Image 1 (cartoon, rainbow, N blue to C red):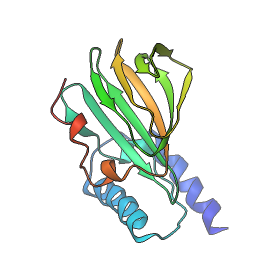
Image 2: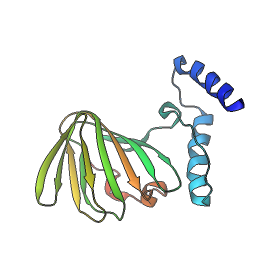
Image 3: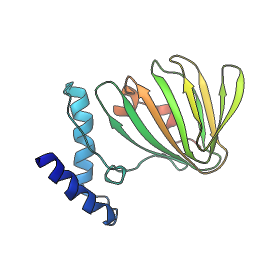
Image 4: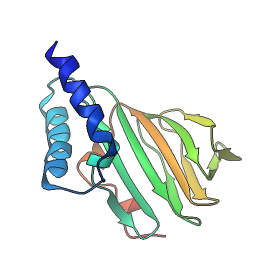
Length: 158
């Protein structure tokens, strides 16, 4: 019963203005710490409570880390280039709004709003935002380089 009451209280908060608070920073840090500690816990995390991480002037992201999976909301401005890279993580990319052009497996593939691209582990890929884009990426296992901020290929570039 307490869980239902908490959910009812949470729903009433949906109409509140979105703001970056110390509490939201703490919640995001807790999610990363829980992953690092290996503890499994139920998490309810509204996107607006996770601070946007600015990787470069054209690229921002937020992410939530579970025990064996990670979901990221990635905001790309038109012309943003994600340089070619690969990782041991399987990746699902779902375009919520906009379009991304991928260079992958010797092909050019444009993924539009409402479409999904499944990228196998270790497959090199590059992307460019054809317009302002909101992308939802799912990784398994979670991206350690994103969690520990060692993803230099995304930082400070166009």
